[in-house]
Amino acid sequence: MRSVENGIRPESEYYQYAPSRLAKSHWLYPLCAGDFRYEPGYSLSRVSYDSYLAEVILSGDLTVESMGRRYAARAGDVVFLDCHQPHRYASDNGWHALWLHLDGPPAPGYASLIFQRNSCVFRSQHREKVEQELRQLLELFARETPLSEADLALRLTRILTWLSEPAAPADPLTAERGVDRAVAAVNRAIGREPSVQEMARMAALSEYHFIRQFTRRVGMTPRQYVISARMNHAQYLLTSTDLPIAAIAHQVGYASESMFCAAFKRIHRITPTGYRMGQEEIV
Image 1 (cartoon, rainbow, N blue to C red):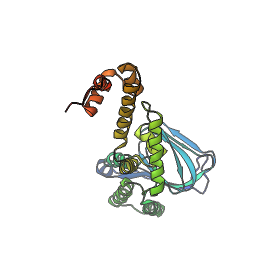
Image 2 (cartoon, rainbow, N blue to C red):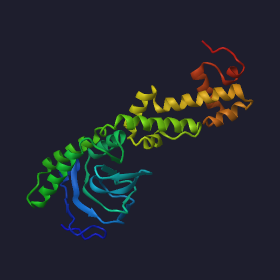
Image 3 (cartoon, one colour):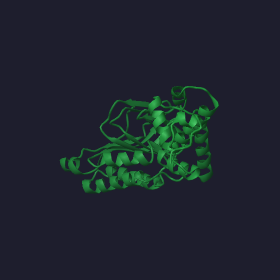
Image 4 (cartoon, helix red, strand yellow):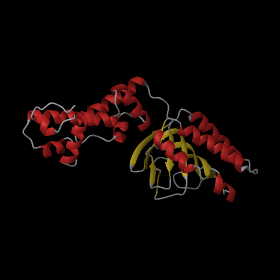
């Protein structure tokens, strides 16, 4: 079918599919799929749409908002959204994409793995395979012949399995620079450090790859590094200032003096007060 939606070029095509009761109970199934050319200025916002969206960006660029975060997507990227949650996508320049809305009992598990290893927008190492599978799916719909739901489920399983693998490895030098930016950000704002998700964005890596790259380069996880930076700063404040322990706890990012003291003692085997007085650590 030709699209008649505002902001979609008229040569764009899409197909609807109604799954059987069997498919709804057991398999992955498509709901609709298309090959769309979006005009400049196009935007779409939804509170909820009962499906998951997989989209391969062929050209152009767009902004995607989902799960409280904002992403930039461009040609070569894959977009994967849980459309049950509020989401929005828009573009000043327009874009061309192959897309598929799908659902089914296995879908939430695949989605959880995809978001754990990648994000809503990423460079899949299997992008070409996903694109080819989407094109074949559109060709099947265009033939107007009976479709095997088992075959459709297998095709969708392949797509989600490919997307659930970690994104294509980043260039090592680029990844190292990204990790260095994250390290600098932590040390500039001890007690107000960026979250792991924010650091991953700084490094232009998925959270999964950022943690791996950070650990390899720094020798500890991002969370461990944050704690180490906090404790180093706390040691400096304890020996170089007369600030009360509660004030130091606040400066290095702890919600209470007791939480800070417990963390300090766990790491240094001595209380902050004992450290300030020059006592030996507990053995």
